[in-house]
Length: 112
Image 1: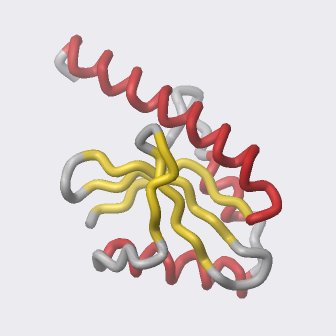
Image 2 (image 1 turned 90 degrees about the vertical axis):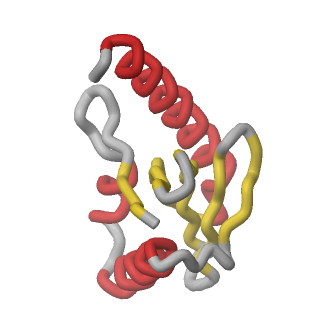
Image 3 (image 1 turned 120 degrees about the vertical axis):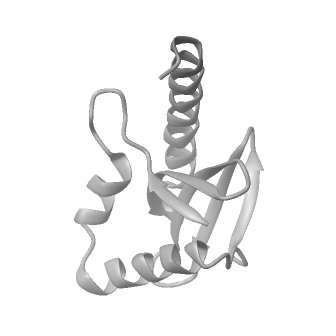
């Protein structure tokens, strides 16, 4: 699997901003989860609707990564968060997914 962080049209990266504020131990847990996804281990992953998936990390406050799959080998990560912020994180990830789809459609139309 190829794992990519989504970069918004304005150049920001919500997942990176969240990840950079984690303490070292939490960052290591999240980085390990990402490596597991790259290796094809999606055992903690489930689809939550409208093309959006959630990868659960059962440690600490219950970390979550929100993502979509584009094709057979590409996973796009949108945001990360905790169980406590799950609803707002899902809303944010859904909005980013719609932005991603719109950008992809425009690129297809213009040939970029």
